[in-house]
Length: 191
Image (tube, rainbow, N blue to C red):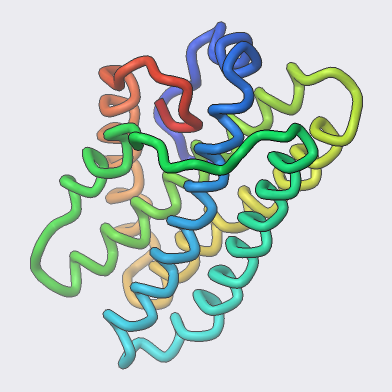
């Protein structure tokens, strides 16, 4: 279960396929950002021992995925370049409360929702792709993305009551749906 409050609009996969090189470049940036976020949490919360190993493992896996996207780009003879990111994550992080420990809760749950949306979009893309290496590769990523989503939820449940986590996850899922509904239409994984 991905805990999303909305589904991606019909037509997104066709739009993504029509802009596949840009989507792949954005995907690489997303994997790199996901690794960075996991590492930042390690440094921000060194006293939260239960976060250390799971976030370290997650960061390594995100960097592995980053390298895999670079390989897919190379296979397509596409250069990895800087892109103007969508405003999706920045707008979503604005919902994170500032005071601890609620900041930790919200940050973990925002990370979980970003991973959930990635999983949903990668599934749509994988279903729309023709048979081949790229389709198979996206299929292989789906379980990881879903696991990353649940890893962040489970980490939150280490520190907060399950009912509180579920309630806040539902609230933030609605924020995420609203952010996505008003996002600019650019070829990005989360726009």
